[in-house]
Image (cartoon, rainbow, N blue to C red):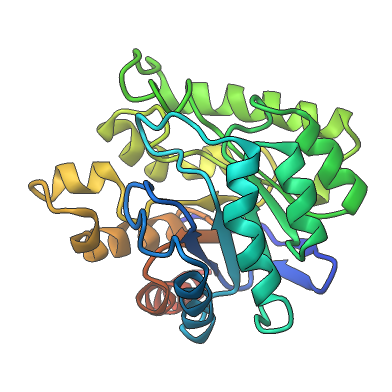
Length: 286
């Protein structure tokens, strides 16, 4: 168990004090093919109901994505992505009280999503796919999440894994941070994510959780997303994504105790309980 640095994150509508308690980010995939819930919230009506349910369940942030980046996925055009997310963003305007993050690797999508009310940009490629995302975040003064991905979604679980996963993640995140800073994004508006499941072996995912304090030493708030992922299925004798809730809970607790500030999850109400109790353990150990 390690200390957790405190940060202040400024959104257009509010300020988050990170480190006092763990923030829970709910995942809403408006896609037909995401690994865990693809097609479940593909129509706007279902997506809106799910968003409101996550808010009621205690989510602090809602992360909406219109493109699957699961292993083997081929990608989606900006037009398709916008066609999926904009109706949901527009419908949630005035209904949802928690801020929305847009999960995209395209600057044009980030720009349109912010215009429709999104307040955070979450780039799973860490600016490798489209460095202009940094300029969009800077222009609108919204926080930018930089995730480490080794390779591309289509091939990331087929190509050779890094010999030293932590070193590879640190190198990649430093590169992403440098691009963001050159574009004018202030240090206080950057969040980092080690990219669990994105170009890592099953064992490397566990190593990254255990060694999260080394990633936190970069000096930025840490977000981590382990929810329902394949490495849990491998450990749990092949259980499907919807049956990995307790495995997810274990990794959420472990990540918080290792210093994570934000956890990105599908099962919001359950993981809010995990986060609140783990935060109590964390606080008692100070």
